[in-house]
Length: 128
Image (cartoon, rainbow, N blue to C red; front, side, top):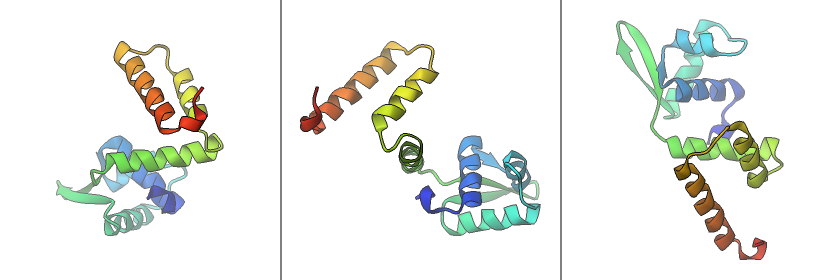
């Protein structure tokens, strides 16, 4: 889904997903090498036209937020990251992510074990 967005629209969408909600000025301020304010407004209108974001009016300003579809967005972003930076290997990506954390809670460790066990069960030819 977000893979098919042009670079600037994807950047804006990711800013809104991260921020929760923001005005066009807020979005522009968070962009790397931002285009003009009117260009940001045009890009926001395109995203809204695609049904990915919506706005409300607050104190005469449009406040934008992403449409709730967190699981689809997460999955799409992760697939793109794994494909781009880890040669398609989810295991390599998971190992890198684990390297970023200093410790895991017991619940997080248990969830990881369950996910690994499920992956082994669903891919019997790749069992250890």
